[in-house]
Image 1 (cartoon, rainbow, N blue to C red):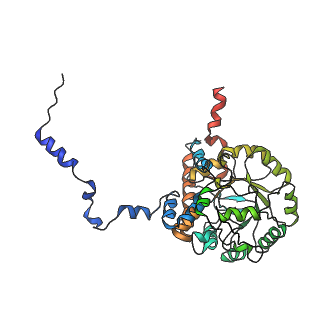
Image 2 (image 1 turned 135 degrees about the horizontal axis):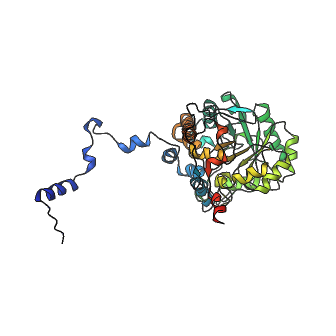
Image 3 (image 1 turned 30 degrees about the horizontal axis):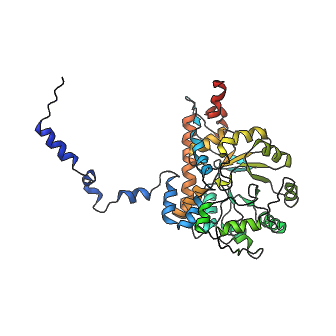
Amino acid sequence: MVHVFISKISVVNYLNFSTRSPLKAAPSSLGQNYNIKDKMSSEPVNVNDFKELARLKLPKMYYDFYAGGAEDEHTLRENIQAFCRIMIQPRVLVDVSQIDLSTTILGHRISAPILVAPTAAHKLAFHEGEQATARAAAAAKTIMILSYSSTCSIEEVASSCNAVRFFQLYIFKRRDISALLVQRAERFGYKAIVLTADTPRLGRREADIKNKMIAPPVKNLEGLISIDVNSDQGSKLETYANEMLDASLRWEDISWLRSITSLPILIKGILTHEDATKAVEAGVDGIIVSNHGARQLDFAPATISVLEEVVHAVKGKIPVLLDGGVRRGTDVFKALALGAQAVLIGRPVLFGLAAKGEGGVRTVLEMLKNELEISMALSGCPCIKDITRSHVRTPYDKLPSML
């Protein structure tokens, strides 16, 4: 038998302690009006913190438009979670006193392998729209890909600052409209065309349908095409896209696009070995592995899970980039180890813009660069070319040992 003796003093002290509120013991030097929650929310420490700040600032319709995915949003979640199943295998006793993040994309030197992805309607997030985003990208010494559905025109963004930019293109039923957009981009100094190939129709984005999301004005189409689409139900954005975009687009049309521009052409939306092979055969200058931010086909694979398949198909003939789910510098590191030359950042840029304008976008890009630098140092990689396949282990690497 074990006897336990508890003194009266111990009981009294326990009762006194358990009934105290720890918050009442806050240091007096913080002042009576100090609000810990407000202090934390105003100082994001990583890219993910900007999402909540954006949610608090934006109207629900606009936040849902940026944040939402297709149908059950399985792919939206998987884009991020798939990165978590990849482990980094660091090397030690390597001189990492100097870390060089810089790399080259289509001959253009950038400060880090992190580009700004094409995303629509930046003025829904911040009144200066894509011009603010362009300045932030220029300050970060990286490339911004301007969306055709931007709320600032090709010309306005070009005049906002001196920087390397690409232009993202959809093919319309009226090919003359697409051709004119390409000509304007080329005339105003854009350095490549990014053809989005995964949108014969718009995916079923249920948040937009519930909100009856109104398609924002597409500045680049003013005076070229009617953008006043009436819809009594669902998303007006979906109705607009389905009426305007060319669902007949085929691989053979790459040659048409090549015939109207001298700019390099990257194709965005590749997820399979077969399509990557066809892209090389079609003569494109680069591939972006993308599932459209999980906004098109739900249950399409997470981009990081198919990146290596695409890289193997390309066999080094053209550069492969990746977008979708990148939220940490370690994510960038993993993508590079699996063969990507760079990654594209979409939603974090929009959330940074919504939360803190141009400065928010700068901070998002700097956070990712700083995290990548730390990841490289701790993994024994002084420069980008030192990051190799042997630095990561994926779930698929375990299969041979189990056979």
